[in-house]
Image (cartoon, rainbow, N blue to C red; front, side):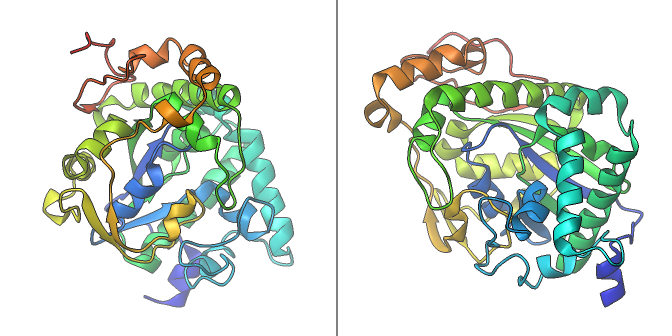
Length: 336
């Protein structure tokens, strides 16, 4: 492929580029799921693409690619970052302009406006044009026909159907808010600490917005609990591949184990730097002993009524079986 094609990022083929978009709130397991899918031929996990410009400019939490190099030195992202930058504009100034558009158009609070009004302003049209070029350039550079984006910003997810030459598929990924609160309570490299109350408030808001997106796209969406993934990762990865029309025979999981190679993710859980043999633990209940009782109660209370609607129980029992389509899972079934 020519350097010109990579730089332009405007080579729209007749076959739409598939984007598997994982939505929900942070610490929901999207990074490991994305990295497992990254092992499938012609599938490429971009990580949290929304933060590419911010992190590359040193304005975000971390500036490293999953390969360990700075984003500006990675052989992939260093060739993607100049896309859409006007002549004579510095990389820093371009990043600032992208960040301003993101804040103005595609935050979580903008999800419903994007769903209802689409490309309603010049700012969002400019952002959509940049994202279109970026996705296609990444696909050209990596040879991927499926990109996995684990950004989890609902406003960005809602924008995908408005990008030329893109076929979006959605996974609404949910994790027990108590486990999420526990994860946020621990310092981890570039990740800051967040209280149970604040974490759960975000958990609620991001999941409500994610529900709105998959309601609009029932035929290409799947609801998935993190706990179902770790209980049966082979079945989960099979389902995700089928969702976007890919062959489950390429599933890299072997039981609870997968071999991970170096990836090129734009931020995400710091575990993204781990390579080699990786074992998926089949339980996620350390919050029972490690998260203080007041924090557990805050997470369970503030997440109501989604807590029960998603099948969670105060005793921790969880119904099994991920569900295809739907704005949200059916009303919680009886505890077994």
